[in-house]
Image 1 (cartoon, helix red, strand yellow):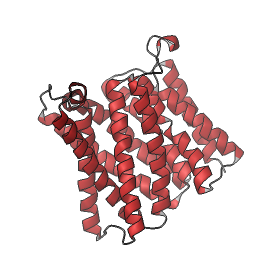
Image 2 (spheres, rainbow, N blue to C red):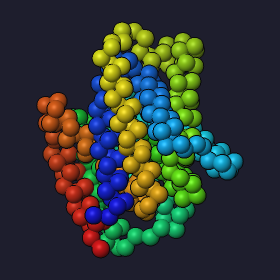
Image 3 (cartoon, rainbow, N blue to C red):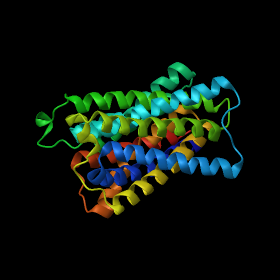
Length: 296
């Protein structure tokens, strides 16, 4: 199995599990609190790893600034994603955001000069369609599903930002160590996320305040869930960054977008949920796409 596919799948496993934990935590704490908490925990763990390995931020000012900008982009992507899930429709938001892997393939070809064989291109297309099918559950049928609304707008923003972040990370990591880059980007990411939650709380606007969920009492268990989600996010980011350093950007980015498949499998195994026919079809498409990508 290609190393890019392996590391991307590792990131998908971590992030798909994180989505389950984040969803459970959001019910108690609110989507923005969970987003900020996950990013903060992830940043603290990365700082600990950096201290233990004697790694610091990039010495080159240009790379330092680029890493910080990527942190802002990442914060925007996470905030847009969780906000989209909060205001829905969840089924469409999750499916649209999952398509960032397909957009990453396109951006990697255009801006990084990467290339795919015709068979790999077909596999990437089939896998992307499978990811979207896996993540989308059409409640009441396709005709009853709305593809418009504020949640969908946030999904489009998150989709684009995740793909841009992936290509940007690949470009900076190839000029420096992976830990140096994600260390800075994640610290900035956490600062922006926490600052956003504080700002929304300070504004106290009824609609914005609902995203923080002050009306729900936070429990100790919910914060433990956030801690677990942060650790999973950090693990996924590390594997992801290593993959971007040693393999093709399009392959790592595409494979990492298989997270929704992991999410529904975890939900089936541990939460007693059942798959719908379209989700089964999506899993089959992902499997077929992976085989096409992995073949020489």
